Structures are given as C-alpha cells and as structure tokens.
Image 1: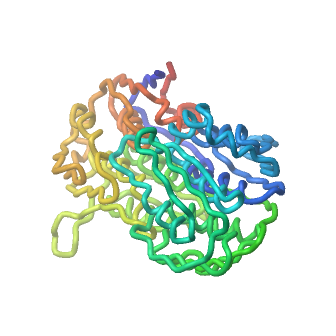
Image 2: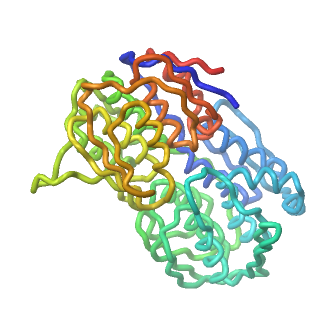
Amino acid sequence: MSTFQIEGGYKLNGTIEPQGAKNEALQVICATLLTNQDVYIENIPEIRDVLKLIEILGKLGVQTERIEKGKYLFNASEINIDFLKTKEYAELAASLRGSIMIIGPLLARFGRGFIPQPGGDKIGRRRVDTHFIGFQKLGAKFEFDADNHWFSISAKKMKGTYMLLDEASVTGTANILMAAVLADGTTTIYNAACEPYLQQLSKMLVSMGAKITGIGSNLLTIKGTTALKGCSHRILPDMIEVGSFIGLAAMTASDITIKNVGLKHLGIIPASFRRLGINVEQEKDNLVVKNTEHYEIDSYIDGSIMTIADAPWPGLTPDLLSVFLVVATQAKGSVLIHQKMFESRLFFVDKLIDMGAQIILCDPHRATVIGLDRKHTLRATNMTSPDIRAGIALLIAALSAKGESSIHNIEQIDRGYENIDARLNSLGAKITRL
C-alpha cells in the first residue's frame, strides 16, 4: 500500500490541464467490442481503472495498440468469448466496476455475456438491476448464480422495445444503449441518463453507423442496425478533475488557471463553486481561479442556510460532493451538503473533523459544514483514502493544512487521477510518493 507524504500550507500557482474523462473512457472503450473494424480513441486517461479495462479487453482478444500517450487503437475482430469463463477474467472484472459495460456490447454482437458481481468503490450499495432489466426487455435471458456471484445473459436475437428505466443509471443506460444498437427494430429508452459521458458515447456510436435520436435528453430512440463500422473518437476533459482543481485553488488560497476544460460540458459545476463564494472566471475554454483568500457562502433569498446536493445530469455530479464539503470548511458561512445518490460516501468526514473542521454528520447522506473563514487552518494528520473521490478531497485538505500529513491507500486516488502528485507539484505543492 503506497502513501502520499504531504507538506501543506503552501500557496500554489500556475496552469494545469485536466486529463480525459475517466467515466467516458470506460464507456467508449467497451463500445469498441461492437465492431470488427479499427477504432481509434484519443485523450484516454492512463489511470489504474482504465488500464485495467484495456487489459481485460486485450485478454478477451481485442488487439490494442498504444499509438502515443493517450491515443489507442482497438480492433475486436477476433474475440475469445470463452475467456469470460476463466478464473483470471473473474478476478480482473470483479475488481473493476466499469467492466460491467462489456456485457451490452457482447450480448449485442455475440448473443451472450458473463460478469462477476462488480466491485469498485466502497460507497454503499450500487445495484445493477437496471442493466439486466433492460436486457430482459430486449428479449435476453438473465441468470444470477448467487453462490458464485456470477451474472450471465444470453439472447439469440434481441428485439427493440419501449422501456422506462427505474432509475437514470449512467452505466445502465450505456449498457442498454450499446445492446440496443444491434437489436431488430426500434428501442425507446425513457428516463435515460443524459450526462456528457452518455452524449459522447451516443455520438461515437452514431459515427460507427448507429441510428440514435434524442441525444442529450432523457428519451433516447434507437433504430437497430445489422453491423457497426470503425471510427475515431476523442474523449472530453474530465469535469471531475476540473472541479477538483477549482476546489484545490480555493482551499490553498491559490491562483490557478485550468486550461481546456470543455466549458460547455461542465453544466452547473462552475456556478456551484461560485455559490460558495469562489471567484471562478472564464477565459475562452479556460477557467481562472484567483483571489480566494476569503470566500463567503451564499444563502437563500430568505436568509436560510444553502444546500449543495447532487442530482442526475444536468444536476450536480455526486463525484464532486466530497470536494465541495472540504472547500466549505474554510469558507465564511454554513452549508448543508446532501449526498442523495449514494450512501456511505460522507463517512470520510471523521478525518476532516480530526483536522479541526467544524462538521456535523447528520446521517449517511447529510453533513452540515460550518466554515472557519481561515481563522483556524486545518491540522496535519495521518489518513487513509477510502475511495477515489474522498481520496482527492483528503489530498486537498492536506495541502491546505500546515504541517506534514500522510495519506495511505493512494492506489484509490490513482484509480481516478493520473500522476496527480507530479502534476500538483508542478504548481508548487510538496507531495512525496512513498
């Protein structure tokens, strides 16, 4: 288990550029299984989770070539479907939640697929019913081996249908969408997720020959086709990294320019940080964060305490709630952070309380933060990263705290952020990887 040793309390300065979006990468890489032709994908973040997915596809028979940093060629013309029944596959796939999205393409093209019960972050229950209910509506047969924790799905030929998803699941929508593009007839998906990741996946599928309308809405219509062709695709900048860097600048009272952020795909993220009083300015496709020595949380019109809550797109992404919570500790004023979409994701706040933050954990979903207005800086401490997003929040907290902190289990952070220590050190941070 690796560790970050952080000497905090320093202001940072400079320019940083976000990596490619992890969540999009996992989807579009799985989509390469839908064709036997070459698919080129650019701006792939070379992080632990994405590289593991590429490894799984390689062992499944997908020819993968790293053309240059972030640019890969995929060719899935020769797939060994029997690899799905091996112990090696079970171990690899069980450790990567995103691997569940290979099921839709395999079902569409080969008529069957297998996946162990997914692992991933320990942030509470994250059911996968939506995926398999959708497949069943398309005519597939689903089986669950409860003793061995295996899912299997099969269909001779799927037929388009209307479906109303029980939740706007991002990975569920992606999986069903990839299954539907090769089904007979027309499929309508209502209450579909419409995050930028889904929009990008849809646009990539269209460039491969799929017929999809309603992209960007929660109502997708797919006219099935018999085969898809190859394509080239470029992944968007990672909006979670953009938000993390805004929070980092605020917490460390730094002036930071975030380049090439893909502003039109950020939704309400910049505006939500402005509600915490943070000065976020737009310069073309860059964001500039400066003059953050003091920032004051807004209140509602009637003077009541503001709530920052996550919601399906175009609401605020749940992956940034941990950053908002940390940033609020040094603001002036109070805010309620409401994590609606996942349970157990706020349990890292005990570490922040140990550092001197004024936080009341109301329940697994809500925390009230009383901002210190920098009158009391956070104390350095020893911590362990429980998941990707809590990990980056703890790193931001440690960089703002005077003294030397340590964060263990940084493999969790590496799953979502590429070379984050070197990149932040280029801004003046003092992070040592042990």
